[in-house]
Image (cartoon, rainbow, N blue to C red; front, side):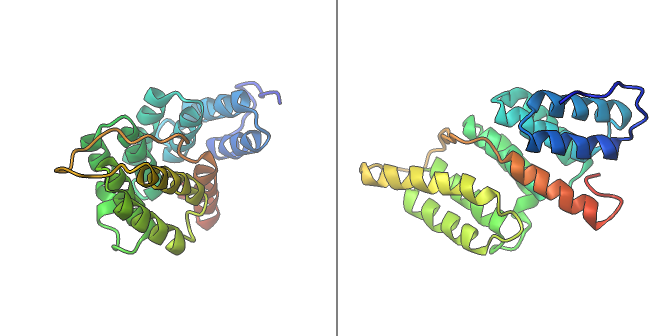
Length: 207
């Protein structure tokens, strides 16, 4: 997939949608190119930063992913999944303090909200409280309709916790926060789904 020249006259919204089409085609190079061109036009577009961060996370470029998702949450604080995925990346590095900072907007959600339950599950996993981790994440998955693409990611954490229990591991001493092994990057499909729904719901979209 070729990327049109910078003088094509496309605006940031058009470039975002082209980026998502390129993503559907599995063309990461074109996706990043469209997003960077969009950001050159609209550097304060939180949706563009969100999707670029998700792509960098999928590519394993976690420093860039964290920087982009941090910017996305600053510019578009209503994107709850961006906050959640940013915290997930910090937790995967064992930096629970920064994860908790990223998750502050999640803390204000109702206690039965899927993202609130997923956050609790990740924290239980970090504390090696595997039974509580499994319970919280299962409850989140059962309640999750809006952020369905996250269910696969969270299901992998259940598998991880179940394996730890089967191996006889678990919390036998005061809780200690350890790195959370997350083998799967935050879902790019979820970022794409969220942005499409935001843009379809009104002109403010991912901003």
